Image (cartoon, each protein chain N blue to C red):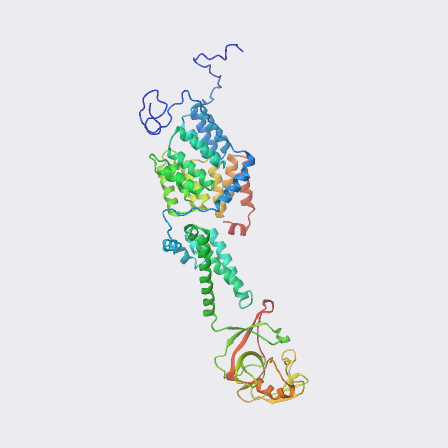
Length: 334
Length: 251
């Protein structure tokens, strides 16, 4: 009697194979051949328990971990996902997981667009951080998840990668935008839809010789009364070189012509009385808000000293009202 | 009825009257029927046919392994594991039974046990293609190279039932979301077995995930071969409802 499994020729009358133990005949044995079945009510509970068991991961075999940080040495060679995660979607494209590629790229692009739109605001770094987190998540999902076998290690790697990538993003942005500055203004100019606290995008002035237009918002080195210290401030150019600037009933007059109060507002600290000054060559009359202490008549003389700014002290000019988003527009002075 | 008709004398049983052309309902008939129903995606009826085959010959390994496979298809993993233990009383340490236990445990998210059974299975002699398929399934979420190698071995090892093994490999690839490779295998299977509703259904699902236009044709073909199959019907509705963005992003 030949065994069907191992082809061993057994003696006639044998019920089990002498070599492999498989059954040859079931004479005299009653076998139940109907398998047990699951009750329908158990199905959802079984499914739930399967889902719960999925969270529990099995450690990678053949890699005994002796000390706390030995696992890092074991996985040191697995840098592929880390490198590939720098370009979103590349790691998954390599694994031919194209559906995942689309999602990662779409979410990453959305984060980048949001980061650009919200840049320099309070929320600006959040989408950038999310973008960095997506890189870290890609690295985990593309391979590290399978290699690292505990939640603590995954979290540790995720956090370290996030911090490195976030720092990388900040350095990259600083490298790209090295020629730009973002500053908050203290001025309110209704004609330009600018309010106190808005953020302006500034570009440095390389060559101070060309005359700046009236109304240009500039960053300049503002002097202080009583000491020689200087601080950077945002101001609006009112008077150009060789012009006569006057204040009459809290309205600026240039060469006797009144300027629009909407476009050229007089700061609150300016005295109520009328004044007039001639702007010298190489100087601008720059209007800005100062915090003035002391009696009014003592500050009157200082007004002109504060407002007359040398062209070489002007560092940058505002090109755009950057924030808030709903009022974002480019600034085009007269 | 004769009063002595039910007495057993150990002699020849009276044969049931049979219609002319009616097939002989022997073990092979039930095994063929079971495979036919499996290829139609009707795992419950396939299981019943395996039971009927075993009722006639309980030493038949194909019947036991088929029963366990059908229990796994019906997501009754605990029962499949239990039944594999019982089958192993008859076929001790059979690699295919160990492999089926590994699959049952893997799908039940008991990965450690599944790996153990799979290791045990491949350490045995006379490996079958399903041992390698099970190995591929166990390591499906972990290591790409192992899975590809196991699938290649399974297909190479299959002789008579190569198309069945290809179909199972394609189903595995679909679970792994390697739709393009699964479509390649399923196209080969369908050329050989055009009447398999399961193959058409699997092909339709893969094509649907890839956003191909042939999805509707494949699923309709599956429904034509097995009318009122709710899985194919649902899949057809799901894929036909998708708009442009659905096709683009739900691949």
